[in-house]
Length: 345
View 1: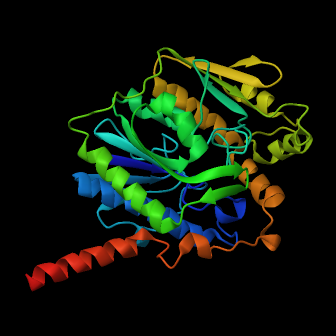
View 2 (view 1 turned 180 degrees about the vertical axis):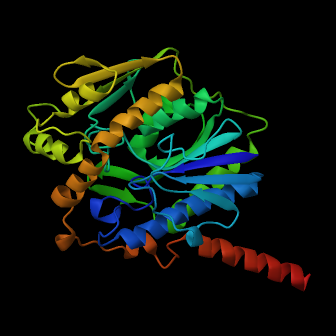
View 3 (view 1 turned 45 degrees about the horizontal axis):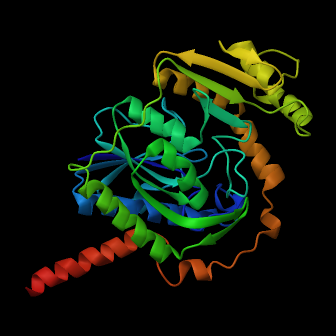
């Protein structure tokens, strides 16, 4: 039983602010440990359920958040931006099922914690007319390989949005969204326990109850709404695009103009580009190509304009409650107890 885990960060236990999810921000080191803890709980649950091989793709930000030393020793880690399938580095049809850990709601979700679809420049993404978030983009991706998703963890709004796409699988709500930067959170001890048990159930029941892989009808059409001209940030963004475009030009392209200039897309002014492919993976890769035009710019914007590290304050005691940030320590402790019991026997 081979399990592929795609792990994002905004839907990880306890997270609710930009200052917690990027390197150099005041709470990043704490929450990268909790991120590893959520993943390790899923890994241990998968192993308890019968999984024999597990690969984890770090799929947030610059995709180097989880350190190898912090990951469960029975899983392999795939990190870094050099990848073909965006949030699925190392994925193939040889996997039996996928977990989505730490996922978040789509762009435009009212009061969704850190809601977005890949980057702030993407205002909405529609697959064959259906507006979806990353749970949908990635669910259809693994489904196109004949692989089902069997577990998703994240906030309540993400679970609500994902169910029509992913179907009757295991879901773990680790927090309730109360605003873009505000949530009601389970203590990580409880969220890790729920993730472990859900992962164990998902893998354990798989041979008897294999979910149908989610599939988009082919040929598939993606529609992407980008930053609009009337957006108050667009003037600055057009100037910023000059820094990041790989061309000898002085013309400040808008986001739509930039994509239309360099990619084979259809344009519906002022905000939408679309493209159609016979294979879902090809359309997904085109969306990833478009993302790379704005990725660094948008992360810089989040860090410089949205994050307020100098005023960040948060009492994490109710979240931690004396438990280890990274569930790996609890797993090791459990293994040590089992070995001591066997020796006594």
